[in-house]
Length: 501
Ligand code: BES
Ligand code: MN
Ligand code: ZN
Image 1 (cartoon, rainbow, N blue to C red):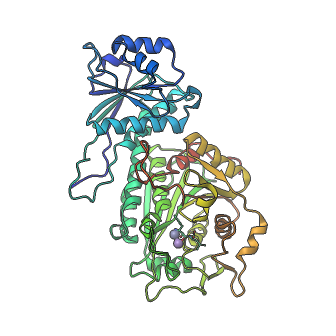
Image 2: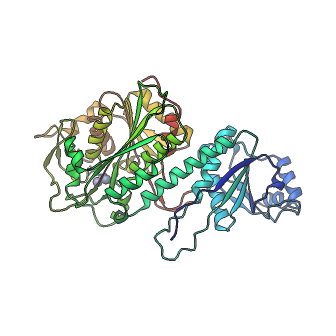
Image 3: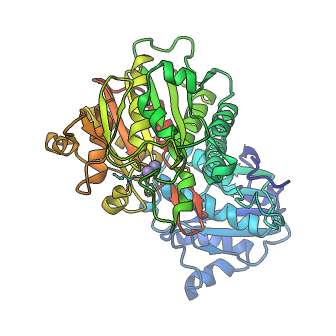
């Protein structure tokens, strides 16, 4: 049996580079490196680095790799890889993580199972931040999405990684490794096809992922969902023979302030055909990733619990297929939400907002004061922001800014879009309280406006990851497939506590 990832043994050491007992040493180097740094390496590699830089064979551009001649006999490692950083002032969290993933990926491809990272390039980061990102990146790279291949020659993993840095970095390395592991576990779920991940299977696997000290889990079945009156979740689920589930994870550490609870709500559509408003065949297979938001919030809560962060938090994931079965809801049908609002379903493909509406309402019922939902919600957000940037929506403004700052800290790109009252007009229905599909203009905004109707009065934000959850092409720092985006941002939101809202 193939595995999707392995978590490397990870340690920190203040040993000199030459003394590290590994197969390969990775050395980051900024484009504006100093002559003395290059000189020091040149004495080890017989002038190799200096001449490569001079010839322009290696320019130390971001994530550029250079393998110099083997180090002298006084080094224990037999291989070295230089990883370019670009200009030092540009080496932020995202760049450092990409460098770590790229270099560790190269190590794996070259079948080196024991590596060391020389923490010699500070970039713009603190030592703690850097070590954490390096550990996370190396763990992230130790991932192989060929689990379903009968023959797989890529099953080679890094077994051991040592970060050569100053003292006191062990905790940061452990945190980074745990984050990387949570992200990989989420990527496994997101990559999994619909027949391997029905709502019931997702509930079970998500529950397993979250079975760490401090988290209690509850899985509501279709009867429990019905007794809560969640007509929107049940309505979407009607089109499938697979029953829906609602996963509720709670993390309530002793001593956490009682007045505030963070709820992370994630869209868990295990496959989105569009329902009776059927999607075109071309590219529909991508819709197996429509539970990315759900996997994201579960992975984030897991990391929050592993880090023993001092706040109350929960994760809520409504899980269903969106199928065009004989009992499926039809365009024009009216559903009654758990909140009491009625919705005219003019397009069954706008299913995410329906199931999230019930889940957001439930988050408030359970006492959430600060809510963030994460969802592959609209194709329109790809039109607005492309495939690099997650759409951010919410209210009040300080809560949105708080999330924006956390994303910047985490090195993930988000950008705010407005929720002006004028957009509400588009939600109007002749015969119900609102429609679920308000037409093409401002499609990701009106989707967020719909969610807002169910998010209650407290702080709420929505992250539309339809453009960012899936990488369409392979990059050295991100193989094709699930990205695991926003897990780090959610962790950083929880780490930075609640702003005054
Ligand atoms: N899951 C899709 C959104 C999506 C589209 C994610 C492309 C990733 C890539 C969502 O359920 C959906 O179908 N949204 C519709 C909404 C419309 C009918 C109002 C859309 O974006 O077309
Ligand atoms: Mn849809
Ligand atoms: Zn969907």
